[in-house]
Image 1 (tube, rainbow, N blue to C red):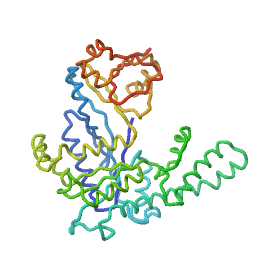
Image 2: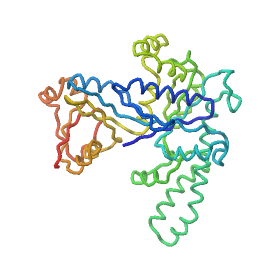
Image 3: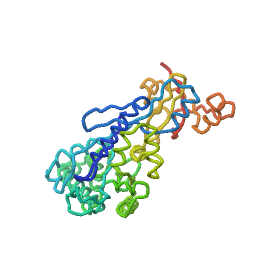
Image 4: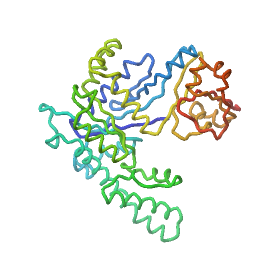
Length: 365
């Protein structure tokens, strides 16, 4: 199950520095956190989760296997990308293949690094990228509407339904708003996502600040946070330069360096977790002597679907899920203690998996 978060942004905003730090950090954690570079611009990284090590200590697990998320470093965008300017066509094609967007914004001043627009204005930069994506979506949908209208007029029910969804998006796009703002009924969400619109994807704004503002942010990041709040988008503030330095330090040096800057953990940890949350994902665990492992499912997933993440046979032959909430597992110092405390539950096919559940599946082979 792959989940891809694309790192996008204008040129010279620190996007590649951030991605390089991300992959270096993951490589340094290889002993406990598997990492692989699938392509030069794709990194598969572990989602930091201290709960996993706690479970491993209780279960005396020989191995720790975290859940993962893939970050894709996408070529920089410029004005006119929707018309193929710069690397526009490649940029738009790459975005179509990801599940969510981590939009890096320059929130620092540096006379040695030229800004493509000649000024530091991260909100304007965000609007530049959003506008190009809106124009690309609008062009794509308007080309598809005419033939669909003919089918709808001939009485095709599916065509009428698809046309109605397209018009919801087009109305927003023509008004300069992203497709993700559409008001949808639960049954419309899946077919709406299948329209493959760039602006339907969830967005996380990543404020790249100077070193001195890594812990507190600055006026630029505050402006981005206000914009994100209006949009219902996520926001993370980090310093790509600090992350690049941190990635090259030993574990002991890293903690001391971060502490001197007033930081409790690398900003990349927050970025990874925020990207994971942005995709609407949650973690459940399995724990035993062999391994403690984190698994990923989408929010709202039921027990058989979670079982299927481990192995398709588990889903097809699902009988029940033996479930303990993470806090109850820790409080009972393992399965036996949780069982004695009455916190061990048998859940059926309709059970909605909760973040942190420690699960064991029973199934027919």
